[in-house]
Every structure is written in structure tokens, then in C-alpha cells.
Amino acid sequence: MAAILEEVKASTDESDSMVDPEAALYQKSMRRLLQPIQKHLEDESVSEIMINGFDTIYVESKGKITKTTDSFKDEETWEAAVRNITQFVGKRLTPENLSIEARLPEGHRVHIVQAPAAISGTSVAIRKFAKEKLDVAELIKFGSMSEQCAEFLGIAVHLAKNVIISGGTGSGKTTLLNCLSAMIPSDERIIVLEDSTELQLQQDHVVQFEVKPPDAYGRGGITMRELFRGTLRMRPDRIVVGECRGGEAIDMIQAMNSGHGGSMSTAHANTPLDAIARLEVMSLMGGVDLPLSAIRAQISSAIEIIVQISRFHDGSRMLTHVSEVGPVNDEGHSTVKDIFVLVEKPDGKRELQWTGVRPSFVQQVQQARHELKIELTEPLWA
Image (cartoon, rainbow, N blue to C red; front, side, top):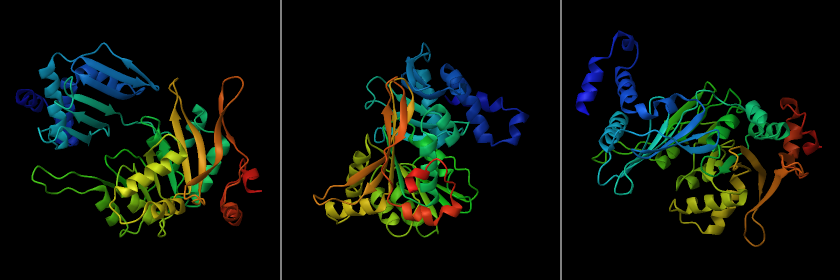
């Protein structure tokens, strides 16, 4: 490994002097060490590369996962490539720390799990950073949402409604969050919190924070909850959390209930009601001394819109529900009302349609009508 890096360093020419030397060294060494998957890294149609061992490589392209015929020379070559990745990101795989998550220079997110947790050898998943930034217009073109729904979501974002994007792994939650965040007015201060930076907000006044684990001696780390608490003192107009995974959910809920409207995040869940239940569980993980009934009431008060997205067997990703969160009912359960639902037509095609239910913020829309673009959603506010 050391010999390879020295050889690469010696071969760094004058063309690399204009860029970060460390990044240039990384690029050269990775081209050599990751040669078996280099074509997939360069292929813009590939969204994820999954290496289950030195001789088992899968890729996801256009929503479909296929096994490739590529492989690394042997286990030693593969381990050298993994060590190069960990060396660059400044993290270590040890017997006490069997997995790491990090961000590569190109923006790709990488997750590594080593033996003995990985039975068939060190496993790596690389979620690629999309160079082309999708927008809502393209999602409409792909059939992921309807024009009417897009207008509705634009109005909700403009009016600073708190939005949760719910979906399974690989369903397109982060892509959708990117698209919806583009609807935030450009004169607002947006603070973004993520475990690994993935979001690509287009506004000028964006501050991005990233979770950092402590070093081998327990120094220098910062958690999502610590970032969130600090963010509240930094005058955000909007807070965007890449993904709620744990106890930070209660911090987000409390922030939404204390005047920080227009916040957005994602959560792993299969339906809008499941998303609320997931937020309940994560809030309880925050260690707050509150009964479930109180947490449930806070969530129902804080979250206003849940956007459900799913990936189908044909690889397509589509919104299946856009729902408004209602108050807790007499039985103490959370409620939602669907504004848009994906309907399968007689010809087998799917279409996101308005359910006929009017949102609760009709009056607010009517009062702000002069600053909103209302065309296709006119029936919702009449």
C-alpha cells in the first residue's frame, strides 16, 4: 500500500499543482486501486455501487440492481483500496470500530463494514453524488409527481409549512428534498444538518454542518443533537435536516413548535402514518421525560405535510401520498388526511391525483394569494 502511494505521489505532475495536492494524490491512487469499478464511478447512469467482497460487485442503474462481471484481483488488493479510502477520509476501521460512513472528495457517500461483522469480507456501498441537479420540472417529466401536486408543494414551502419526506431506502428521499428545498425563497437563511453532506441547495445564504465522530482518543467529535442545539442560536430562517435517525427528532419537533417554520427532513417509513410513528420512536430515543401522548401531540402540532415517495419494481420512483397531519383524535392516535394519492388507472398507468380534500390552510393561502402562483391548484383553495 505504502509503495503504491509513493509511486502515485512521485507521478503527480504540474497539472495537479492548481488543485488540492491531497485530493490529487487521492484521485490518482483511487484510479489505480479502484480500477475494477472505475467505469461505474464514471457512468452517470449508475447511482450506487455495492461491493460485497473482492469478487462480488453489484451496481444500481435507473432503479435496477444488476450483478457485474467485474472483480478485484484478490482480497489483498481489495483491502488496499479500502485502506486508501479510510486514510483519505481520516477514519479508521479497527476491531472496536467495524464500520464507518464518510464522504469522498467527489461528494459520493461511502459506507464500509469489515469482518467479522461482514461475513464474506469487507463490504462497501458507494452512493454516488449526482453531478446533474434534478429539479421539480424534471420530476414531473419523469412522472414522479403531477404538475398540480408540484404547485401545491411549492405553495406549502413558500408558506413555511414543516415538511417530512418519507420513504424506503433508495426511494429518492434526498433527491426530492433537494428539489423541494429549491422552492425556499432566496432571501432566507438556511442551515443544513447532515450526517454526511449530500444536499445541494441552490440558494446563496446556505450554511452546511456535518456530524463528525471523535478521534481515537475521544476528542473533537460533534453529534447531530449538538449541531441542532447550536443551530438554534445562529438565527436560521429554515432548518433542513438531511435525515432524522435518532434522538435529534425531538429537538427538531420542539424547534418546529417554537417558531422555526418551514423546516424539512426525511425519515424511513412506508406510509405517512408510519412516518409519524417513526418520529415518535426517535423522539423517545432522545431521552426526554415526556409521556408518549405528549410527544404525539407535539408531533401533530409541529409536522404539517408528509410527502411519501416509493420505488417500484420497474425502478421508477413516484410520490404515492401527499398528506396533511391532523390533530390527535379522541382515542389518542395521530391522524392524517390525504391531499394527493397515487391512483392506478385502467390502462395500468399510475397518476398522482387530488383526493378532493381541501387543506386546512386555505385561508392563509387566500390571504397570501398576491405573492403565490396559483393556477392548477385553484380548486383546492376555492
